[in-house]
Amino acid sequence: MKNRSFLNKLGDFAMGKGFYIVLFLCIATIGISGYYLLKTVVNDTRATAPVGGGASVTIPDQSAAKPTVPSPGVKDDTPVTPARPSPSTKPAAQPDDPEPVKDDTPQPDTQPSKETLSKVFTWPVQGTVLRDYSVETLSLDPTLGDWRTHGGLDIAAAQGVKVLSISAGTVEQVYTDGLMGTTVVVDHGGGLQSWYCNLADDVLVEAGDTVDIGSELGTVGSSAIAEVGVDSHVHLETLLNGQPVDPREYLK
Figure (cartoon, rainbow, N blue to C red):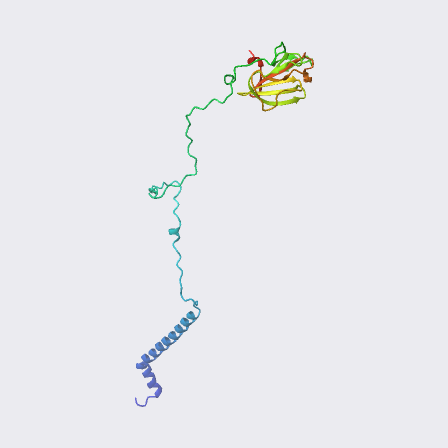
């Protein structure tokens, strides 16, 4: 036994206690190697970290900020409590116009009628009617020799005879018409006007004058070239609200 070689003894040691020693050294070597490897990885990670440190950003919950939209066809039974205005706060005026309130006050009748006019009238001259009022049927025109309407009365009177206002009123116009000659228009109120045509040039009134019933306006002339075929006369027209009416309605 004593003569056994050194190699045999070393083998016996390795198979005995030496095995555990070698195993311990291997484990220690692996542990040390792992420690240094882990330290190297940690140092590399810290070197690449941002300068500001590990700051984190918290993203708010989007479902909390987004209003809930009810699904179509689903009735929302959540009770809604109307906001009450503060007792010290006066409600703001609304832009909508209030509903109109009916005015039951009787309004005066502004429509002109014969009842509102003066009932006192006179003929402008005393004479025979040579050509009558006719706007609905045609009558023979002695001057032109054809049949046409006639919007007034041709009352016979010699030249120079005074022409009178048929009623009280205000002289509205005095002018010379290309066809009907020298003309005076008197406004009697209530929409009624009287027109006196075929007068002499020297009229006695002007626009704005106030006249009474029977006031002299001028004299009979021969200025109406559209009626030269008719004997000496004055042409009288009456208009109510701008529409011709029969002068006889007022000269009865």
